[in-house]
Picture (tube, rainbow, N blue to C red):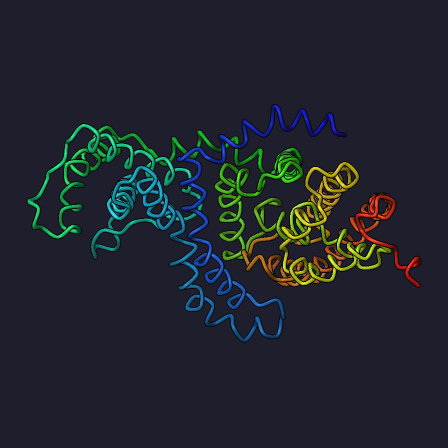
Length: 422
C-alpha cells in the first residue's frame, strides 16, 4: 500500500497540482462556483412551483408560471452570470481590471446569440442560449475576451488617461481598444460569416457531456477525487474545475425537462454525487464516523464526537486530516471502494427508475437524506437509498477501522483502550 502512495505521489500529484493551479481552470472553477447561490435559490422556486405533495401541487398549478419567473431569471441565465464571473476571476489572476474582464466576457458571450423579432414589438434574445446548456460557450468566450484584454495590455494597446483622472475612469478607457477588437470579431464571425458559435461549441463538447452521464463518467471522477484526497489534495476542487461545467449542463437539461413536465433525462449531474456518493464528505466518510463512535480507542471516539455534526453536514476535513484518512493504508481501501460501490448501486437504481433522477441543486450542507429528498423533487425512495448507502459504507469501513483501532492501541498512540481503563 505504501508503494501505491509512493506511485501516486510521484506520478499523480504533480500533474493534479499543476492542474489545480492552472489559471484558466481556476478561473472557470471560481466563476462557476460564484453562481451557486443563484442556482440554489432559483432551484427552490422550481420545488415551490412543482411541490412533491399532489394536493399542494393542484393548488399551486394555476400560479406555476408566475412562481417560475425567479427560476427562469436565475437558472435560465446561469451561463451569462458564469461568463461574467469567469472573466472577472481570470482578469484578476493576470492583475488586470476584473470589472473590465467580466464586462468584456459578457459582451462577447451575448454577441454569439442573434436576436429575433418578437411579435413586431422589437428584438429579443432567446434564453435557451443563456442558460446552463450554453456553459461551454460562456467559458470559451470569457477566456477569449480576457486574453484579448491581456494582449492589448502587454502590447500597450490601451488609452492612458492623465494622472488626475479617477482610477475607475482610467480602467474603463483601458478596456476601450480591447472592446473594439472583441466586439467586431465576434460580430463578424457570428453575423457576417454566419458561423453558429453556439452550435459548434455544443457539438464539440457534446461527447464529454454524454460521457459524463455514463457509468464510466460516474466512476472516473469518484476514483480520481478519492485518490487525490487520499494523498492530501482537495480532490473536489481539482476535478470540479473540469467536471463541473459538464455536471451543470446535465443539471440544466434535467431542470428544463422537469419544468416542462417531461421525464428527467440525466442520471449524473452534480447532485448525484453530492447526495448519494459523497455522504458525509468525499469518501463517504459518514460510515467511518459512525463506526468511530463505538471505537474502543478513546482518540477515535473523541474525534468522532467532535466530527459527527460536521460529517452530517458533509464536512469531513477533520476526519481526513485528523484520523487521519490521508496517507493511511488501513483506511485507503474503504475510502476508495465505498464510493465506487454506492456510486454503481445508485447509478443502476436510477437507470431502472427505482429512484427519481436529481434535478434540484440544494445547499450541500444539508443532511444527506434531506438533500436527496429535495434534489429528486420529493422522492421518498431517495431517502431509503441514502440510508442503504450509509449502511453499506459503514459495514465496509468497519473491519478496516477495527484494524486501525488495534494498531493505535498497540502503539499507544490512542492511549489505553476503554477496557483497560475500567
